[in-house]
Length: 277
Ligand SMILES: [Zn+2]
Image 1 (tube, protein in one colour):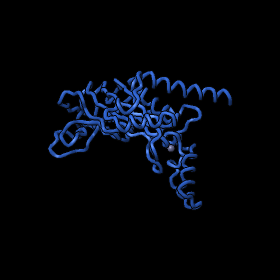
Image 2 (cartoon, helix red, strand yellow; image 1 turned 90 degrees about the vertical axis):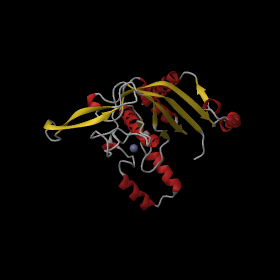
Image 3 (cartoon, helix red, strand yellow; image 1 turned 180 degrees about the vertical axis):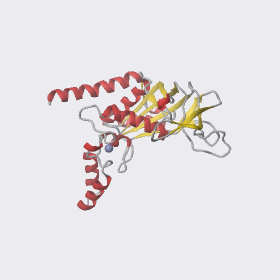
Image 4 (spheres, helix red, strand yellow; image 1 turned 60 degrees about the vertical axis):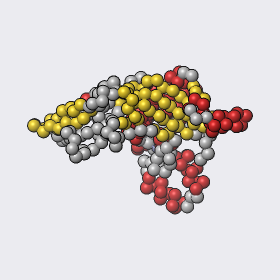
């Protein structure tokens, strides 16, 4: 699909508590569960991990907002093809949909969070890059855990394991790109960002022990809008010839204010809709 508009959210994700994102047991490590590292041995946060927690944060909010839908939390009561993949594929084959009718059906049936974050039938409109560490102690710690019996939920005597964590106050750079969003997509992205701005975000394992609490700082928002014919060429010129982000895209001066405004604007419209029902 051609570019109509882009939003780039950049900032820092700071850990309020230690974090464990497991990278799988590797030979020669001194722990049962090492953290994920780059090939050069530097800890990082995979974009897919951030996307996963960001998506579930947004889903929990969407589930309580009138007129919005998410198939992940309200599975029994959804038409979303992601939750009924087999039915949808059968229907598609039976009715011999061409590309266009398939796209129309997906637009009609996919829930709001699948439209934004992607589904087995559509690509994601929001992309999370891997987060690189920009401030950390340079060393990690090994924490002890006990093995919990899944049935009794009690600790199993003498069975211990350990896992590696990166310390609290480590800081990672993040980049989230949103392409051709609708007003609803922007609202959903902003609700997720605002939860992380408020310090309600968690990432990685052992959440119930308080690990992985994190917070967004120094948020910046860059936009490119090619939808107005009067300014399109001028914006394209800037975008294609600039090299630094600031030269290519428009910078929103107060990013946190922008996030709050987008949320309030969308919710005010929902409020009007509810009152008109
Ligand atoms: Zn869905």
